[in-house]
Length: 471
Image 1 (cartoon, rainbow, N blue to C red):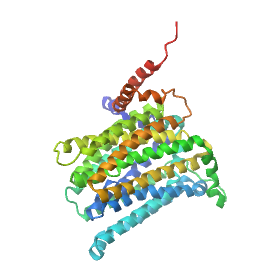
Image 2 (image 1 turned 180 degrees about the vertical axis):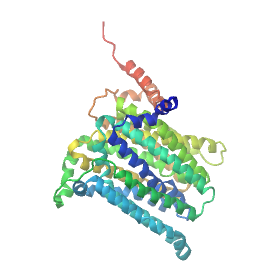
Image 3 (image 1 turned 90 degrees about the vertical axis):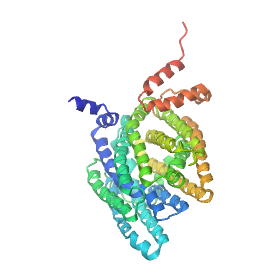
């Protein structure tokens, strides 16, 4: 009993227990689904591409396929409404895993037609996987919006980040030790086999999630564009999407290139890279619930501000992190893990902010427009970064790190003033953060939130900012 009570006090376990039954089932499906994602389009995909000789510019295109294809979700409103998010996702999730089966012909293709044919096969199959996913992804957020109540959304996203990262830790560590230092093509194919199997198993758990039913309706041409009328007239939501786009791009300028940096600049082995990545996932699992509770108590804006400021400050030093300094090999893994934590904290908070600005009767068009925004940000960035690195090598990495840091600062400010939540959290005005002392306090709080000290520090700050009544 004593051991059980200790386990329940672990942040991620406590977060899952606090969720209602329906959100908990959706979380279970998501956790199994990540096995497929991590093995097929995760870091192993980038390492596989480099193993078969794919250049950095094409790797950037490969990375961009997943977010770019999500733009198709904008055309899926009538189908999501008629078929229902659940049935649509069941069909498309099955198809996307079956599409990847020809990947096992990779050794034959390379042997018979050369490396470029192997690159084409990998890009083509990944595109097919992403397209099938995109057709069903339009139902993801509306279904999630249906099963997760307003008051639990911050808790859900933090619990999701934690449990998903727990799975990530197991997968990445397994992949790292399995691949070793000089992996062969056949070893990567084993990882793809695990991903396809995991994807098929996730269908079982998806079927157990309640809700997601369709409506009997005749599909007309105007149904493909008419639902977006109210969204495009919502100035508050549109003004939120612009800084959100910048912020997503800012964090992606680092996340889309750091594996290439570790492999091509620091010359780390696949095992070391995946161990570093798994360490980041482990710490996300431990820290995400604290960020979710902070957002639920004080709002998404202050959480996003602190996460992006910390992200920006940690990325700047990478401009000088080159192999000739031996200490770089010890410091870089620590900073990568910290940046991963703040990137996940931002991701959790920005999604909470988005869902809390979505009207209940307009879930599908609102969340689809968000999918388009995030798809553009996460799709354009790796292509541009890949081109910059391909043509400028190390200088290209430096430019990417600088852009990431600058955009984080800018988007942190814009997100703080543009997010309008249903509840008034009475946060201090932005001008107060122009004070160096206040800005430094915000950065310190960003680190403290992850260690469970956020509520005490914020309480102190609110008491300091509160006016003392006369008399």
